[in-house]
Length: 127
Image 1 (cartoon, rainbow, N blue to C red):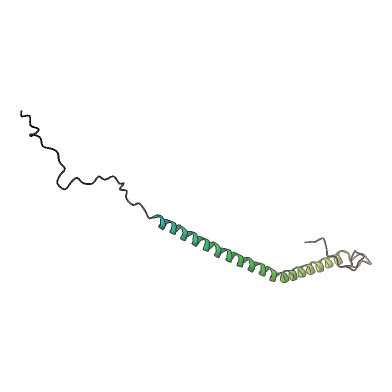
Image 2: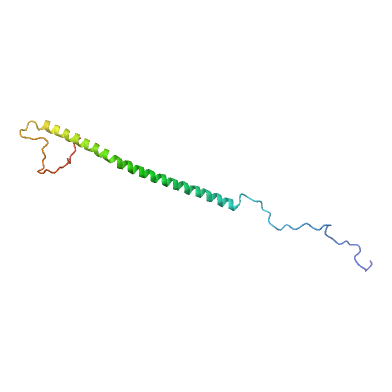
C-alpha cells in the first residue's frame, strides 16, 4: 500500500441539481367552507328569524286589536239579546203565576213582593 492517501474511494456527493427540499410544513386539505361564510350564513338566518318574529308580533297585535273591537261592537247586541230573553222569561213566569194562582181571590199576579218602587231583578231563574 502506498501511504499517500485514499485513492481508491469515491466520496458520496449530492446529485446534480441538489437534493429536493425537505417537506416540513403540514399539507392538510381544505375541508368545508371558510369561517366568514359560516358566520355570514348564520347571521343571515338569525336576521331572517328576527324579521319573522317581528312580523308575527305585529300580526298578533293586530288580531288582538281586531278581536277587542269586535267584542266592543258586539256588546250592544248581546245586551239586547239578554234583555229580550229576560223579558220573555218574565212574561212566561207571569203567565205561570196567573195559571197557578187563579183560584186564590185577591191575588195580583206580577205584583212585587218587595215594598219598594225600585226595580229588583229576579234572582231565581226557572228553566
